[in-house]
Image 1 (spheres, rainbow, N blue to C red):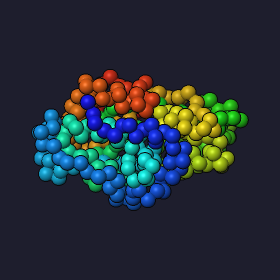
Image 2 (image 1 turned 120 degrees about the horizontal axis):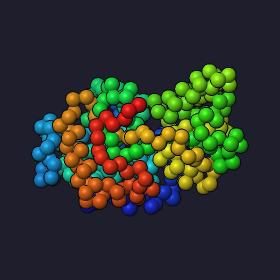
Image 3 (image 1 turned 135 degrees about the vertical axis):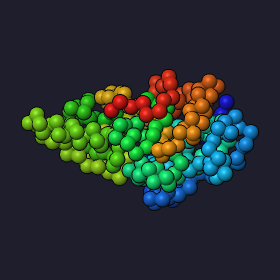
Image 4 (image 1 turned 180 degrees about the vertical axis):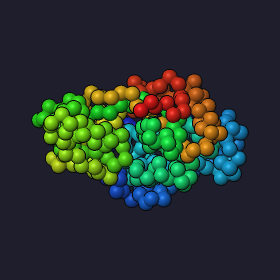
Length: 305
């Protein structure tokens, strides 16, 4: 079983509304293109069950550098000190570390820079609640570990009665640069115009924090985002926000790797299978209210769209 700092979530949940809007601009981690280490590396454990499965280069390096956009609760965000990374992905990384024996160091990277950074081999992997898509598979490989969907975040009042993406014609909508939600919103806008309706008034923000703040300030009327994180935001908004049912629930999230990382991916696959077997995987998802997102098999590039 894992020995990660999972107990921190109880306190973090209480302060999540305040943290959410300060995480992206906090001094806890760098937001430069190159990324800045935001988590101290633990010790290498050469006796770990899967240490010998790692590539020799990883063993020599003594750590794995993971790109992550640290402003996306409940997956990765800052604790009260604005330095320590917590969340579902961080706890999952802790559990994987126990199996492979090498620390996984999170580096704060703008979301739309993660795939280019991996393609350029600047990072060993990414853990950032990233949707596995056919388009992204052209540049990187995914090890799917979580089933997600897309939904729409609104104010609790929801004066435009938005329930699904087809309701967004003529609506001011926020999106996050580089995300599946932003892509789906643009596609929907084209469909609105084709049907003789007004296009979606789509504003793309650099980060999720900015998009949700715009919703709360009335600059946009809705935000299209992942169902899992949207539900978490709504639950921790002091009843100010609401999430629609998912309008699409067939998109896996994956741990992302540069092309040519087959040996490392196999080690991670075995690690995930082990932490499922010992109960850690289900425990981590349940801790963040994401039990329904568990998947039955950890596959490579499992998305079909």
